[in-house]
Image 1: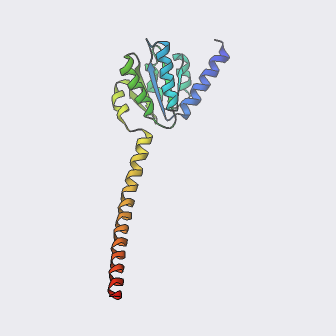
Image 2: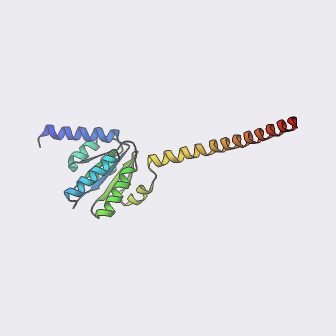
Length: 173
């Protein structure tokens, strides 16, 4: 690989790292080609970009991004980086599921919103609600009072209709 290719990779990884709301650094030692393909497919479905990068190039790229200093010492051995832009938890869930299934994928470190988490905290990270789950919870919380109000208005309207019917029946009698 020549110098310009390396510089292009460093620039690409730095750009992705700057845009990402979360980055997960994983050791993929021992994965078969089929397993690696399946992992990439899962990441793609979740809108996560996955890139295998030489550690020296990854470090140079991360030097351009603030808040990633604590990651440098974890850049040892084979490293795949999952960049997530919307849902910071989706990669953790995928890595956890894949790790349990294959026993080979290991999280080294994760950076979520500039906060660094050691790979040993994968269980905690994977149990956090996804963006979609959070949105559903917020919408449910908003809809609960509204549906209560609608139910109350409906009950009042039914009572009002019953009263009007009763008055009209008395007038007719």
